[in-house]
Length: 239
Image: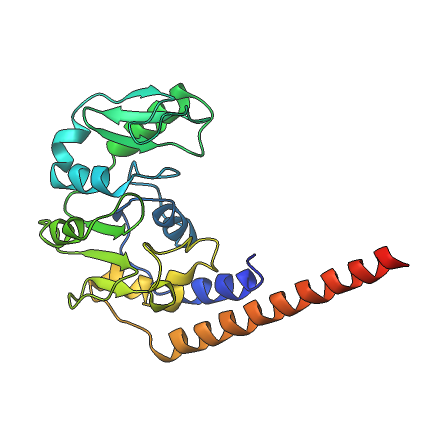
């Protein structure tokens, strides 16, 4: 899935040498934030690690961040969004829920959430959002109105706001796809290190174009290879 992961690691390593915003708090609605902090070898000064929010809950959480973090978190295996139980802990703070997909127990999830929540640096906040999980257009407008200077939003829809990064390859879909599984795609759209260092959103254009060409060529090759394998299996079955 991540055939060019070694390329990504080399690119991140070069950029990480320029990173100087130590002690940053990076809030994110999914695991992307944790991956970025890990790549930059930074402590997790944020509770939003190895979990995800659905969009309505994430926006509500950010709108009253200090309030929700002051309240006790509880756990179950039930989600308000689905009738079936989850195989992982689902955290709840009043009306907001978080899905702790990479945790084995309520105790572990609670300990990590509370420990990391205490490390939040409200004077050095960076926010990442995206249009995944029961997203509606009004939620983006609420995100853009949040009182945080440094925020960015990954979108499958074009938007004039500078904070919105449009992933055009997902334009015909209802949300951005799995950016982690798709080669950590955010690294090819904007300079993450420069953003966290300075707050400036520096978009890539040539690199983005090359990345799309690479993805297109790889997908064509994979389809061709799959067709060839299917043809060979069919011939072998007839022999």
